[in-house]
Length: 234
Image (cartoon, rainbow, N blue to C red; front, side):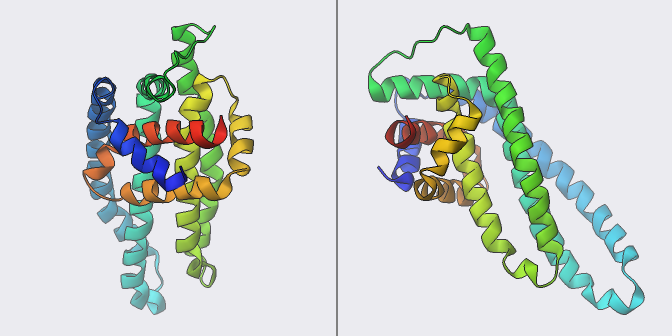
């Protein structure tokens, strides 16, 4: 399967008997985190725009409308990224278990490990923090590029490429971790399958922006990422 096929397969897998039970808790977590993120973003947007408007000198006041539109775009992107990162950190232990069950269902083999369940759960949260530290500096660079006249013309393409790559890293990491592959080794393997990784990440990235659909994205992404791991990275 190519990357897109793997993501579509993830959407199918989470609806299968035996796997649906592992989707419920992450889904509830997603609803709570997304609701909190939207509530915070709406409350802060007006205050942020008031600050920006007051900071513009009089001769640049005509840029207020453009700044407002740019603010909405950047704010939405940051909201979506924050939602994904926070929800994944909280739901990491449940996502790790879902990935194990998906791999076992696909391969027909029991995934064995010498690591205790307690350490696996702790390690899954630690990996989420490692991924966050990997994303953060790149995210900051993208925000800066989006604010620089001239360079911001290529910003939309960079956001899509970065978003797709982030999705691939995020959702293949659960299977890699369950198979005791380090985060550094996972990045190396993804680097050898960059095109397929981007094919997997692009639909995940765009679906993340669709209300309600994004609530099932994380478990579907975990299942699809596990399928991608089996097909391309194992």
